[in-house]
Image 1 (cartoon, helix red, strand yellow):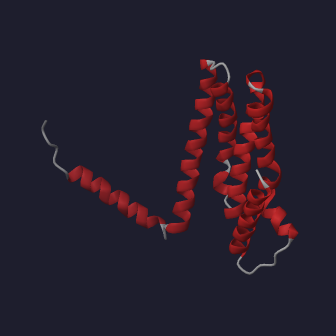
Image 2 (image 1 turned 180 degrees about the horizontal axis):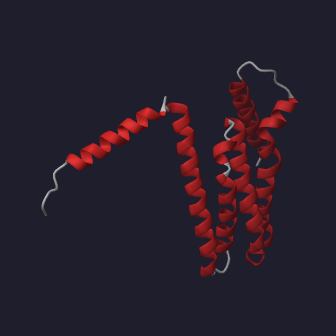
Image 3 (image 1 turned 120 degrees about the vertical axis):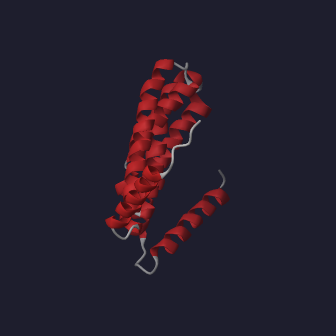
Length: 167
């Protein structure tokens, strides 16, 4: 990366922070508070990937496990920091372990038994994402519980009253 690319990314992040800030005080503390994953965690994950792809090669495939975990955890943390979404972004940390193991599987010797924990962690993470995202959407956008109750009652009544079609 050249200086122009890094400068452009810094200005882009600074502009996003100022836009999301909307009138609050702004200083170095705010930058560290909002962008600590981009400053510390994500570069470390990228460093481990750089070690594998540029320096070490196939014999050092193990560095991809912490690289994938740190990169994914950094992205999850950055999204959670920017949008104050820790309550529904935490399953990303389970997914981070699955990503690290999947990179080890993909670039390693492809041991098929490694797919078992990868799939379990991925499904568990996606299940928690779905449940907590639905709960968050339900709490923010639905005015009251009786609306869902009425919808379920009407859907059940329609299902019971529909004629069975003979095949």
